[in-house]
Every structure is written in C-alpha cells, then in structure tokens.
Image 1 (cartoon, rainbow, N blue to C red):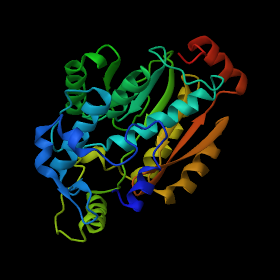
Image 2 (image 1 turned 90 degrees about the vertical axis):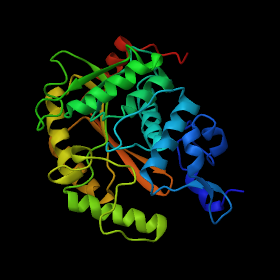
Image 3 (image 1 turned 60 degrees about the vertical axis):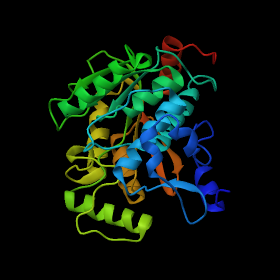
Image 4 (image 1 turned 180 degrees about the horizontal axis):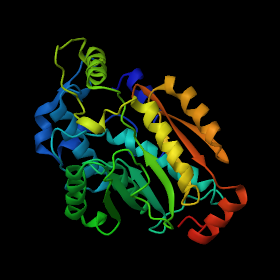
Length: 323
C-alpha cells in the first residue's frame, strides 16, 4: 500500500494529470525492459526507483511518455536535462485552464491553438505534452543548436508529432522573443521553464541538497539527478534576471500573444517578478500555484490585451465548443 505521505504528494498534481497516483512500475517496465533493473522496494514496502540516479530517472520518464502519451521514441544526449514528465504535464494543463477563461470555460483544442516554448531543450517535452494532450501546435526555441537538432530528431521519430512542432534556433543569447517571433506572427501562449541557477557552484549546491533529501548523503562532486548542461540550468543573474528580461522583451510583442507565462521555481523571486511586471504594466497578471511531488512551484502569467481584445482574439482564432 502507498504511504499516506506519498498519496498526499501525488494528489497535488492537476486533476487531469495522467500521472496522479502511485506509479505502476510493473506496467511502465512493460514498455521499457531497461527500467526493470532499477526497480526496488523502498522502506515503506512500495516499489520505487533510485531518484538520485540520472539513468533511472531518464528511463522512468521515457516509460511515462510511452505508456501514457504514446511517444515511443524519446531520446537525447545523457548530459542534457531530463525533465520530470508529471510536473511538465501540470504546466500544460494549467495553461489549458487559463485559455479556457477566454473561451467561455471550454479548453480550446486543435492545431489552430499555437504555443511558443522558450528553451524547448533537447527533450522537446512541453510541445510533446501539448500536442498529445490537446492537439496544439508549437514553436520551440533554443539557443543551443545541438538541442534544436535533438528536438527535431524526436519530432521526426514520432508520427504524432510531425508537422505540429517547429523548432527555431535563437542566434542571439541575450534575446528571447526577438529573432524567434516574426513581426505579425501570433501565438496563443508562451511557456518557459527558466534556467534556475546563477552559476555552476549554485547548481552543485542545489544538487547537494537534493541528494541529502533523497539519500541523506553528500558527494563532493555530485551529478545532477535530472542531468542538465550550461544554459539549461545556469543564467547570469539566475531565474529572476531571466524572467525580468523576458517580461521586458514581452512588451515589444504585446499584440503577438494572448498569454505570456513562466515558471517561478524560487518563491523568494516572486516579489521581484511582480514588482518588475507592475513596472512594465500589462493589463492583467495571474499567479497559478502548482504542486508536484514534494515540491511547490507556481506559474506567473500576464497579458497586455484588454478584455475586449481578448474576446476578439478568441473569436478570431478558436472554436468555443469543447469537442
């Protein structure tokens, strides 16, 4: 039987999240024979994997995408960040809820709904989930040409993703929307999981804390249990500076997007994010709480469009009825 604590943590996921409840590791292992050797019984008597092992974590998430979302081919270099599928799926579901507020309570589905994923990464995870859950189309941007190549390979390897995700290389690292969105191009939402750390030292300290929580152990040179390299995790000034740059540049594309959004992983950064947003002055700002496993996070979203402009946007681009 799953522990009470585990049930409580899992139940914090979005109600539509396919990963609510205890993982059925036997079912997941049926799609991935390599995962089987990493499964063991923990001290609560439940099947689990070693979440401090990057290989085990990657195999688990590959199995989740295969079993629940039908993605048979999902591979990328081991040094790249391996996203946790349940948390990424939550972001997609909360964005769907946000869009429904502009669509008379119905989630707009289909390829006419277009999202922009800033920093799509080698795994292309957010577009994959948006396509498989809601049949949306995506633009995925990244500053790393190798990550773009990896994402494109994943897209071409899965029929369900082909012609629904376009990858674009950001040639100027200081830009976020410039060089990606065309002058008159429209996207219904922007999503972003910003680099978390301000330096490699900070990244290593964060991993030390994770390892201590997971295994009560320390390592002088820890490996990141979800992997990750360079810009995926590190940005000068950290998460807050990245989001401030994103907000500032979003003003130049105010009429190109209905809802801009970003994850804010560090609660301590919220005050600075809201202060900067209010300085820029969008029409509306929203904070959307999220809870994944034992971690609390939140989405901050903003729009520059007035209520009338939002209604006009919906009427021009979407079908109201939820099909």
